[in-house]
Amino acid sequence: MDLYVTALALVVFLAVLLSTGNGHLCVIEPRQRGDFDISKSGSHTCFRHGPPCGGEPASPPTHTYLSSTAVTLLWQQNYNHYTVGYPGYMDVAWSDVTDMKNFHLLAVIGDLNEHAQDHQRNYSIPVVMPSVHCSHCVLRFRYNSHKPGEQIFYQCADIAIKNLTVKTASQQLNNLPVKSPTIPQPPPNPTTMPGSTRLYGFSYSELDTLQCELVSVDAVTGAVYPVKTFDFGVGSGYRPEMLGFGKNSNMSRRSVGQRQNFKAQTQAQGNHFIMDQMLGYSEESKLMFTMKHGKSSSLDAVADTLLVIEAATGNAMEKAVDPKALMSPIVAMTTNGLGSMLTFNMDMVRDKPGTFTFRVGLLDQDGSYQELYSDPSKTEDLYINYLCATADTQKNVLYVLMGNENAPDTLDARIYTFDLSVKPAKMSYAQLDVDNYTISSIHFYQKTGKLVAVSPGLFLDRQVTYTLVTVDPKLGLIKPLWVIAVPDRYQSYYGGDVINLDQQNGVLYHVLRLVDPPNADVIATVSMETQRVTFSNPTNLRHLHNLSFLPYISN
Image (cartoon, helix red, strand yellow):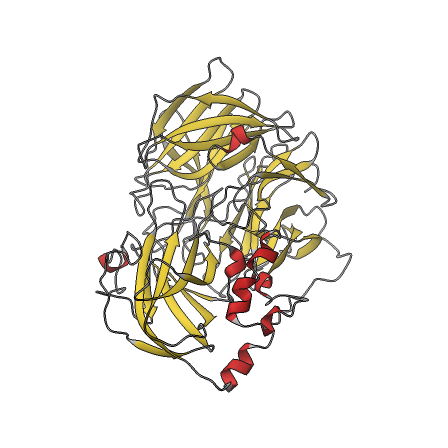
């Protein structure tokens, strides 16, 4: 069946971070069909494909639920396949065991960018059981990551639903509208530290998905200040207000059936969100660019709208993107130094699932598109995990960092170089030496003509030492420059990259996660001229996305 966010039930969830692991999707409560083991990484019980239940036969119901009441479902994502530019989702649906071709959607959760494939997270989600009597029903759980080469993951749990004719206390509680959390705001007209830099990003909470805010962050104090509020989410955000659980709505007082009938009315509203880990910036026009999920309600639709934002004011406008740019999702966007954006796509080879060719294009501010590189004869089926892109705007060269999809712990990677200064444009690559240093982002530093990155060492290192390294795009060598952060104080984390270097002053910014206190971060300011490293006051930036340095705006 078609997936529409308008069919959502209440999807406020609690996400609990666990240890690393290698699986994909396992259902904890109610217990999934077949074998179950989440005690270690790589459990085969979490790796099941094929609709509707991953090939597992039906079993007697393990749980009995009351109809029209709220229950909590619990599952684990054993393996994170977040796809930049085309984020996926997890959903839950129910069906009678005698009618397994017609599932009815209960809830959807957008995928989260964990910046590591080898990662486990529990999801706990309240849903309302349908108003039916069913001696044997099935709950189907899916994870559709949209990841190149990955199939949809399936699990099922066998349950029974007992119909009630009298309203219970739990029903009455369920009919109360959900109040969005109150997020404290900093005082207006804040006083910044002398000489401090402002970074810019988007503040977004999964518990308040009606909107996000363009914010600035003081790189010294760590304080976050609002700039502009937008009526869309970040990543594959879901919109619970479409079923009436958000602001200014009385839909929470409707029955499940009435909510499903509400689909036609809300379909036109769409499911609007911008892409995480994708932000271009033009110094010439002082404009920010990102891709936005347009007016389609389907989470399987490709982001088709260019969002252009005035960095100083937050004023935004939308531009339809040339369909030629959207034959596959745009997964990277970086400036060409002339006011337009270089884009990177992965086009699947026809009749060869899991095999792709790479394409580079030029996207203008008005949404027009020009293809700069494409070679159908050069295909790839292993290094298809996009990580980062940066450009040498003077020589018109694009560098793209791609990870090996089957190396979640060793983090094997390649640097692809697209020379756009010649015609036809040329592509080459170098295998990176990751024996001592692994990376998930790169920056081109114009003054030295080198690629630089922040490395936490190796993925399984217990004591994490963050080091500034250089990356040779021709030989694949990763060499240390100097240590940024000493062991024991910081978590191993492959996110934290701040988009754009301060090319004028030779400064790189990177967010580090403290071991203690919990949920605390610091912004590292790294001078590549003096080798001096300073840290901001402890802050919490877990809710920020697309954090960027914007020349002539940030400083």
